[in-house]
Image (spheres, rainbow, N blue to C red):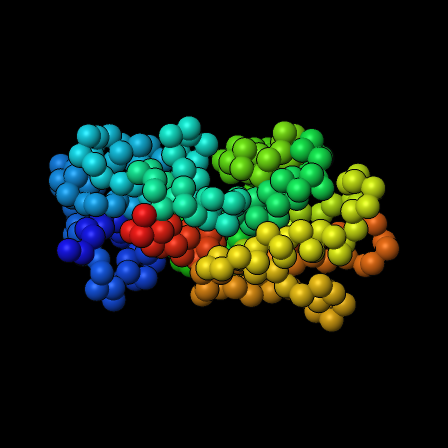
Length: 310
Ligand SMILES: NC(=O)C1=CN([C@@H]2O[C@H](COP(=O)(O)OP(=O)(O)OC[C@H]3O[C@@H](n4cnc5c(N)ncnc54)[C@H](OP(=O)(O)O)[C@@H]3O)[C@@H](O)[C@H]2O)C=CC1
Ligand SMILES: CC(=O)N[C@@H](CCC(=O)OP(=O)(O)O)C(=O)O
């Protein structure tokens, strides 16, 4: 028997990309609603209850509603929204997070998919806090740029259709200027840090791709922590089989010159870089990913595959 999957929000940006990734699979039956029925709570409830696994690609409130619509029916969930990422009874959907996380996802009833910026930030921070190299109260800054699809259907239209009243003309703009962003709670909780980072995201005029920068002063880390050690800890953490995170070779900064924010676009993988000059006392850790790949839809499919196995 094939597993029944319902993507609630299948006509949106994230949902559509998940549907495309699952379209050719013969181990799944995709339950589907017509575009015009996408907000019909009765029809959604019926498919949410019928599904073995429901993948929620909805705004936070609609994601919470979807869970309640299938209450007591045994449906397992993957929620791509922010609604449950720090909730006690949800497993955080980052298989490479720490030892045993893949197994926890595989066995879970409810999995919260990771936020796109959070994926890059936590991938860089968690191995270092876990290894005791990065003090949990380090005064972090996180600087990032995302492709505009990160803002969903609305921002895609604003960036691509200049005739709209709310069209965005800028080629690159900073936002979250009040220094509050919905990903900060999950970054702190799952990154293992206690001091709220100063997070400065931006959007560029490209559809998909993302760079997340975490610059560090080495003299604020432990005595014997240098660039090479940070690289080794990250490489060891992601060396396991089956993960979607890779660490670029040490010293790549010497030859690279520039890093393209679309480096990983079209993939479901994430690449981590350790940049700096040997002996200079500063490093810049950078995560490079597709906001809709490892940052959303690719990650949801990775979690789905684990849950189907569990
Ligand atoms: N875009 C990205 O890079 C990422 C997005 N996410 C998260 O995934 C979720 C979906 O985002 P995204 O795909 O970008 O958003 P979109 O706006 O592109 O798609 C959302 C979809 O949900 C539908 N929807 C909205 N409200 C309801 C409702 N009450 N009941 C049923 N359907 C509804 C929308 O329909 P309608 O067309 O009528 O509005 C639309 O089809 C969000 O929580 C987002 O934060 C997570 C990681 C990355
Ligand atoms: C460019 C842009 O607007 N990005 C979105 C985050 C997109 C995303 O992935 O958010 P979730 O994973 O939490 O749903 C934002 O900053 O709110």
